[in-house]
Structures are given as C-alpha cells and as structure tokens.
Length: 455
Ligand SMILES: Cc1cc2nc3c(=O)[nH]c(=O)nc-3n(C[C@H](O)[C@H](O)[C@H](O)COP(=O)(O)OP(=O)(O)OC[C@H]3O[C@@H](n4cnc5c(N)ncnc54)[C@H](O)[C@@H]3O)c2cc1C
Image 1 (cartoon, rainbow, N blue to C red):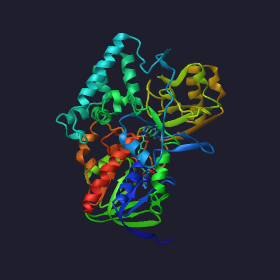
Image 2: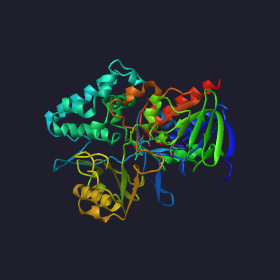
Image 3: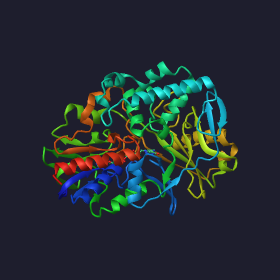
C-alpha cells in the first residue's frame, strides 16, 4: 500500500456541499488556509444536475429559492450566478380520496369548514413556532413536551378534517418526506420558525438557479484552486482540543481546526478518535433519513401549458404527492418532476415495495400525469431519475428528527468539540434544511473557527 500524502493546513473541511465550500470561501477571505475533502467524485452534495444535451441541465437535487432566502441569494450573486422565475402560471390539479379537481391558485381546499380548520391549525403552529429561541429550539421551556410529541399526534388533536390534514401535510411535504408519526413536533416548529412563517414559506418555490443550483458549488470550488480534493472519503478524524488529523485512503491532513460539513447522519461513517461524547454520537447514529427518488419525465415541449395548466399536481397517489414543472427556462424541453417517497406508507407517499424499480416508478408517475393532463402524458421522450435514498455518502434529502432526539442531543448539535466544528443545512438557523440553511450555517461556523484561531 502506498503511503498517504501528508498535508498541513489551518482548517480541514470535510464535505464539499454548499456548506463546506462556503465556509472554505469565508475562511480563505480572512487569509486562513483550508483544504476541503469530499467523498464523492463531484462537488455539490445534495445539489446536483443532469445534463440532457450540451448546456441543457435539469436540477435533480435542491432547486427552488425564494424571498427571504437572503444567504443563498447573496452567495449566488457573489459567484455571478443568476436566478429565474419558476413557472407557476395556470391551473393546478389535485387528486385526493379518488376525486380530481382543479384550482386557479395553490389552495386545494374547496370546503369552507375544511378551510377554517386548516387556517386555524396553521396559525397555531406558527404561534408555537415563534415562541422558540432562534438557533436553540431545544432550550425552550416547553421543548421536552413539544419534542416528545409526534407530529401525527398533534395533527390528530387539531385536524379532524381529513382534507384539511392532507392540505397541511402537503404544505410541509416539500421538506418532510417522512410519515408524520416519525417526526418530532418540535422539529416541525423549529423549521417553520427558521423560515419566518407561512407567508414567506409558501413562496419558497418562487425562483430557481440558472444552470442548476450546483453551478454555485462549481464556482465556489473553482475559486479555491488546488484546495478541493474529491473522491476522498474521510475514514478517521483524530482530534484533540487544539489539533486534528483527518485521514482518507490517500491523504493525511493535519490542521488546527476541522469543520465536519454534512448532515449528521452522514457523519456516522467517520470514525472519531477519541470517540464522540454520548449526545453527539447519538446525533450521528440516529436514523434521520428522509427522502426518496426524484423522477423526471421529459417531453419535446411543456404540452400542459397549452391547455392552461401550471404543471403542478398534488395527490395522495403513489408517485404523485408533488409533481412540478421543471422544464428548461426557455421552454425548449418539457419536464415534469415528481418526488417519490418510498419510505412512507399509506396515503402519504408510496407503499413500501410498490416503486422498487425505475420502470415501475416511471409508469407510476406517468399515470399521475395522465390523470392530470390526459393522454399526452404517454408521449415522454425520456425519463431520468436520481435515487437520493441510495446515493453514496448522502443519507437523504434533509434530516427529519424523530420525537425526542432534538432535546436529547441539545446544544451538542452545534457546539464545537475540541478542534471539531459542525456545519450543514441541518444546523443553519435561517431556512433549516434548504440550501439557504447550508449557507447560513457556513457563515456562522466560519466566524466561530476564525475566532478560535484569533484571526
Ligand atoms: C431532491 C432534493 C430536493 C431539494 N429541494 C430543495 C429546494 O427546492 N430548495 C432548497 O433550498 N433546498 C432543497 N434541497 C435541500 C438542499 O439541497 C440542501 O439543504 C443543501 O444542498 C445541503 O447542503 P450541505 O452542504 O449542508 O450538505 P450536503 O450537500 O449534503 O454536503 C455534504 C457533503 O459531505 C460529503 N460527505 C459525506 N460523507 C463524507 C465523508 N465521509 N468524507 C468526505 N465527504 C463526505 C457528501 O458527499 C456531500 O458532498 C433539496 C435536496 C434534495 C436532495
């Protein structure tokens, strides 16, 4: 076996997602030397794109941005990447409990009693969310009670109306692809609080990044020549209070500080020596995975727009919880994205096993599109997908914390441990879980690390 190449630097950053790369940029700006090590052979982590033909890309990971997401919009502008409006014009299609209907806007509820319950439940969730301390929801006086409550229990108590319950789950589905019984109420509230509330959250799919969101990661990495090492899964982190050695199969990097920039669930594959304290270790070991498969039907053109449809389809059918128009911005190719959640069961998501092959998934999405827009659904020229559940070195879309975990881990989620610091969207206090959260977390950790280095 060849001896590992040794490198010495001020800060070693593990993970070249948006969070790790932004932290690297901010530290470099302060004159601090950094090395970024990334397990995958590409940068970007949970932002990724598929190239359909030269220069024509489809996002298959993080893609929507919106008002209030100032951190991601700022970094996009810094690296010279533009945003474009996401296509929303036209009617939306809904299908719930065997019934199909259309609306002109986003709201699915037709019955005024359902609407009343839904509005009241949203208001109550927002009221509770705004009582949490920013950045440390586990420290709220009633945190333990809220955390021990499964979100499904809260829904049972507040939303007897099944249509209203479905509509509320739909509002949250874009970031919680797990059944509500596996989700802590405190975590739901902390995420809602981190966005600034429903009014702004409802606009979170307003725009997209031109060229795909991963273009930001590419440009951040390009501005760090020779500093980003891809294809280097980190195996061990040997740490003390003032130094750290990070080892991959080929590299041994010694630094004064280390930033672990990934979903805590992803960090469980890394061996820490000495072992992590109990609470931090629990955070890594606990299964927080959520997500599924992003499947995209590709058409010669966005045919549904001709008939006045926006491309938005929301149903309680397998493969059809969340279909959106993902066509190229110039409309030169039509694309319908569906996010399938084989992890969840029952009406919310696909029954386990039903969608176990790409062919089964393609057929399931096609049926949903056929129900929504008619027989042209079957004229797709291609189908592409990204399986985020089986993506190496990525545990899923974003952490969905089960009841009890947030308060058990507490401040250990964010507090530095000796020479180790933590970053990722899960730890960003503005838009936790979104691309914005990754940047917010990186901005915080860069200041934290620089201050420990007295720079
Ligand atoms: C399908 C999908 C849809 C989404 N939709 C949206 C959206 O519309 N809008 C939005 O704002 N956000 C969305 N998100 C979320 C957004 O993409 C993430 O919040 C953000 O990209 C997370 O960045 P990060 O840097 O925190 O983590 P990551 O991107 O996960 O980066 C962590 C990096 O660490 C690496 N790593 C893991 N283990 C090791 C190891 N042992 N050694 C070295 N490296 C390692 C990983 O490979 C990865 O590159 C979506 C995500 C997905 C997957």
